[in-house]
Structures are given as C-alpha cells and as structure tokens.
Length: 156
Image 1 (cartoon, rainbow, N blue to C red):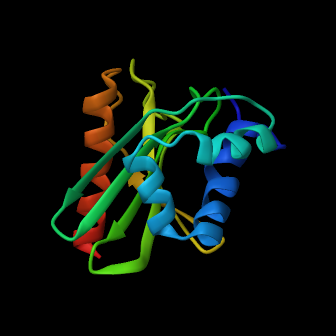
Image 2: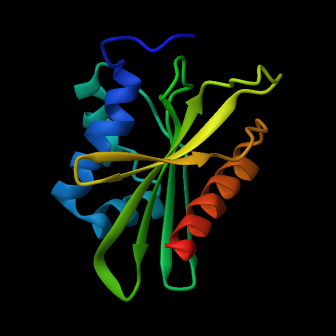
C-alpha cells in the first residue's frame, strides 16, 4: 500500500467533505443525526464523493461531551479513515472537535495494521500519534477510538 497522489473518494469523504459538513450544519445538527441513526443526512455526502455507503453510528454522552462515531468504508490505503468522531459539548453547542482513526504505515512490519489518531481544525489536519489497535469488533473499536480522542482532549 502506497499513498496515491490523488486522494481517493474515501479519503475525500472523511478528511474533506465531513469536516465541511460540520462547518456548514454545525456540530449539534450532525451529532443529533448520529444519535438517531439518520443516515439520510449523510447520503448526499457519499454520493458527492463518488460512492454509496450506509455508515454505522454510535452516540453517547460522557460528562459534558457528546460523542458521535461514524464508520467509513474499509480503508484501502494509508491515511484513509476507519471511523470519524465528532465531539461536542452539552454546555457549549457550538463547540466541536473532529477526529479520524486512520490506516497508517507500520514501519515495524507487525502482523496487525497500524492506526493513527488524527484531528481536523478548520482546514488543518494534525496527526496525534498512534491510534488504538484494530480488533475487528466494531463496538470495541468504536469505544477504543472514542477513548483515545477523549484522552487527547483531557491532555490538551
């Protein structure tokens, strides 16, 4: 797997289209849709990026944080995301942070795919370091991803 010079539709959806949607609709509307499993809100996004997909959603509240996890199509290349996470605050509806859980290059050559935790602020992508190990258990993976993002928020 080597990075393509042109971003794939999966990369565009996770790294460009969803952050733009968050800026356009606001975090409350996006988190509300994730909470009620409103896949229709995102259907045009996938079509615009060139594919059809029905994501899985997970939503919870942890303290003052609203956490909305959305699955993406299985990554095929480095930097494509397994999942995205929108973190909002119950005490500040305009606040949000968007995280990606990405396929990464495993320089050690281990048996499991490497992952990376990333975040988007405005138009800037930041790699936050190694992500949780991918287990293949969707619920465990979604929660591990959310915990990694919360750990980053608490450290900031």
